[in-house]
Amino acid sequence: MIRSTSKIALLASFSVAVSGAVAAAQDSDPNAGTIDQVQLNDVWAEMDVYVPAYTGQAASTSTAVGNNAAALRISGDVSSEISQDFDASASAVNGLRGYAAGTALATTTAYGNASSGGTDYGNNTYRAQQNAAGSIDAQTRVELAGAYDGAAATTAIANVSSTDNNFGESDTDQVQQSAANVSAETDADMAINGYYASFATTAGANATSATGYTSTSTNRARQTTAAGSTVQASTDVYMQDGTNVSSVTNAFGNSATVNNEWGYATLGQEGAPTEQTNGADVDAQSWVTLDQWSGYATSSAYGVGNSALISNVGSDTVMYANQTNDGTVGSQASFSGQSWTGGTGSVAATSIGNAATATVCNYCSDAAVGGRVNQTNNGQVYAYGQASSTYGNAITGSATAIGNAATIQSAGD
Image 1 (cartoon, rainbow, N blue to C red):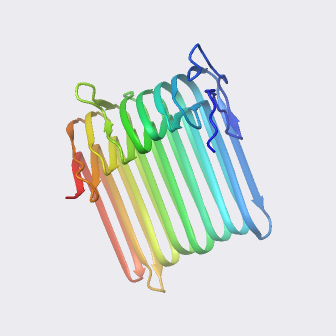
Image 2: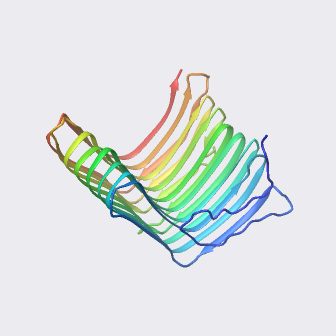
Image 3: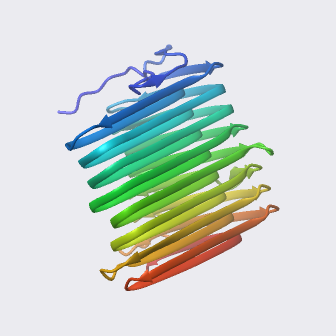
């Protein structure tokens, strides 16, 4: 049996550092609520895990969020209006150090504003307004003699807004403005790993997302980043002996994403398109140095000013988007090492001013995809890659810089 509740509540569920107003709102409509939050002082979280001897598992998590709100319902209709203002510093610092672990995990997250909404078996009406200034920083430091499996994820985003609706209808309007400087950094120094080591770093100014299954999904995003602000992400990995090592770095000004299945889906509408304007300078860097490696080794950096993406399965899909990039967008990726065991290495640096993609999978239906995308890029776009390998089986490298990229496509008939 599916239980339902009519309460819309703000969930301040991050365990390390969350600040801002905490409220639950109900008005005359028990399915509707309003949340207003203002954060004007710093939030800071730091975690340091040290293992002096071998341990089976070592995990370190650090999270700092200025404002955090959620309007969620297990089933039934839900309607919400969320307003968040952040003007301060949100900083998360994380360290995982010492000897060795079977599994080593480090997760670091810093947000200025974070909000979410959604329901199952009902209609979701979601309105979010987010404004961020100041600084958002996430830093991860891994210093271990070894680990069988190792992974680190570092994320810093000024404004994050997401919705999820299944077996119903969703109507969302998400407005985001960022003048914040955003930085995410991962620094890993290890002697050896046994099976894989994965390092992911993401920095962004504004991010919206909507997901749904068997749902009609109508979405609009309006995102702006201020000129003079910066978005920077970097990953630096050094290992004496690595196996299946991956470094992935992403940096973006504005990102709007819709992923739906078996229901009409839109990102923007005719006459009311999704609007993205990026004035921030965006930079993504990935550096990997391996004295010796086995299996694969990957160094990837991706930077984009504005990104709009919608994908759907089995139902009609539409995108209407206007994108303007005024900031400099750059990516740098580097790899160097040697492999006596015949490993393969790859380097990829990709930078795009404006990117828009609308895709529908219609193998099992006659669904169509369409819409209109307008793109203007005024910013410099550059990509730089470097690869150096001694021995090994193969080494590949690519550097791609694109001003505007737009794709509307179907997979199937």
